[in-house]
View (spheres, each protein chain N blue to C red):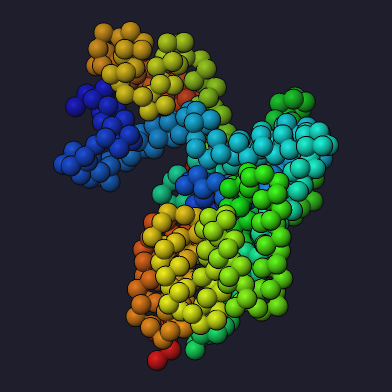
Length: 191
Length: 270
């Protein structure tokens, strides 16, 4: 069984979850230059480095929402492989061929990175399928994701009632779920 | 129950809108029905993936920091000079904070039953220093240059005195600085100086005042207050404060761990 003792750098995770400006500032100062170096020394621009850094932190943030999440390694050992994976994914898309990055920093997978990578791929699949939905479905679901009340959504999107907005939301999400589950990649990316 | 009703219930559950008996029943069903559990997990995962990232509070904060940094990097030379002058002030102030806090972190060595690892970990742990440094940057000294220069000079003098162990002499200067900046970090260092010269009651008053507020140094003030009570020999009061740190939702895991370790050390003092 893996040791689930929180690493002392869990403070970075807590700071992200609490939106603690001081911790977020420290994460930026301490880790962004290193991720920037990873991207810019592997054919990326500074802007692309910023996108990678942000996306990697969002992956960590979302992962940390899970109640059983525990950071058991130094924060950078978690951040680096995720950033590397995100950048490789973007590079592969750009060049349309398999690209590799020399792992000269020697950071090894100490934090079950495979699961996180699967999650990243899975979420990318969800987004891809979401884009296949009709415009009205997308608008409705975005409002639900933004935590808007159904009554308000019904008014904004001209549904007859709150109940019919709920029904429509159900249909849209059902359609999305089917699209996701029908894709063979979904099974590969499941934890 | 039809499919649509189950879906609605899942949505309500994920949005935290299921309460009372409905919640208890749903949670019981979740434990016994693996299909329902898988469906909830999938829906949660989809919601998480498709939530607009820009609405995540920490992402907004991060973007703000990055924009500010990028702006600084692209500022013309003459503006950069002013910035450097500000940075100098902040640096001096941060050094004072750092010296004070480093000394504070060494406190466990002075306890009757010290645990050297704890003190070492504390001094290695730079959160406090970084927090204070950022606290000052966040509060940006926005007054006119003259005032900034004045603060700069006072901070540097205090820094020198504290480096030389002149805590007594630092107190009036810190009081003056605190009056001028109203920066809670200065109050924290002032409390530390009082503690160092054994003005325990004064330092407790200061730490209590900081702890009563909601500043970012609140937890640190509580930690130091616990040490002050220990120095006074009041182990009960020290333990009570440490318990508060342990149970506070605002304390970080590390602070809680350190508080637990210190409580354990106190128990072993007898």
